Length: 396
Image (tube, rainbow, N blue to C red):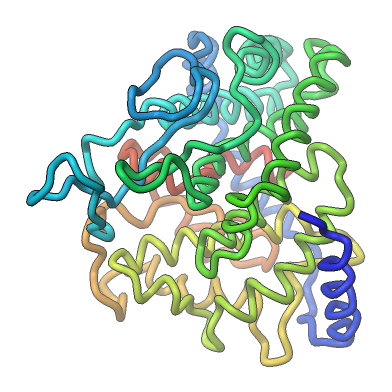
C-alpha cells in the first residue's frame, strides 16, 4: 500500500479536527490500578507456574490437507461455512453465527496457547522481576519467530479459507489478535537478562515483516477497510505491533484512523455499535468491539494525544461506548436486542474495557463489576474473542 497520499489526506482531516471537543480527563486512578493488580496477583502466579511447564507448540506441529500453504503458514477456516447438503463436495454455504465444528482449528488453538503462555509469564515477570519467567518465555518466542524449523511465516495468506471458494481471505487477519499480548509481553520483558539483543532484534524483525504484510497485501488492506469489528481489530493489531517495533508512522496512522474512521462510522450517538447489534450475536460482538476500541486507546494514547479523552463533535468517544454497554454487563437481562444465537450464556466475562476504563475514568463500580466476572474463561469461543486476558502487562 502506498501510504503517503493516504496519510496526507488523513493528516489534513486530523488538522481540520484539531479543535474538536475532548472531555476533561484526570490522571489514571492509582488506587484502582493497585486494586486491579491485587485482584489478579494469585491468578497470575498460578498461571505462570503452569506456563513454566509448557513446551513450545507452533504452526508446524499440525497440518491440514485443505491448506494451500506450507507447514510454516498459519491456516484456519471460515467459522460459519458448512458443506452444502445438496452438494457435499461443492463450495461451502454460509450459516452466519453458527460455527462449523469440523473446521481445522489447530493453528488457532496453538496461537491462543502461545498467547496465554507469554501473557502469564510476562505478567509474573512484571510482578516479581524473576528471570525464570523471561527465560522460559524466550523459548516459546524463539520457536515461533526465530527457529527456521518451527517458525511461523510473517504473513496470513491462508487464514479463514472457505472450501471451494477461497484459499484465504482478508477476514482471516483477525486471527492474529492473539499475538497482541505476545507483542506486549516482549515489551515488558525485553530488558531482562534473559533476552539477548539478537533475540529482541529478531522478534521485532518478525513483527516488522508482518506489519509490512498487513499494510501492503490485499488481504491486509481489505481488513483495514472492513466496516465492523474487523476494521477495529486491524487498527488494534497494527497499533500493538507498531509500538513494539517503534514504527511511528503507523502509530500516527492508527490514531488518525480511530478518530476519523472508526468512531464516526461504527459508534452511534448513544454509544452503541449498530454494525454489531444487527448481527446474529449482537451482545458478544458489541462486547468484543468495545474491548478492541478500548485497547486502541490504551495502546495509542500519549500525554499530548489522549484517545481516552478524544470526542467527536457530537460527543462520541470511548467513555460513551463504555457507559452505553456497562448497564448490560452489570445486568445482562436488560439487553434490548435479541439474544446471541450461540454462546449467549457465556458472556460477559472480565472484559478489559471495564478494568482499563475504571482506571482511566476513576469509576470504582466498573472495577467492582470486573472483579466479580470470570477472569479465566474456558470456552474456546470466549477465549478467542478475548485476546487481552492479562491486564497487568497493559496497566503498568
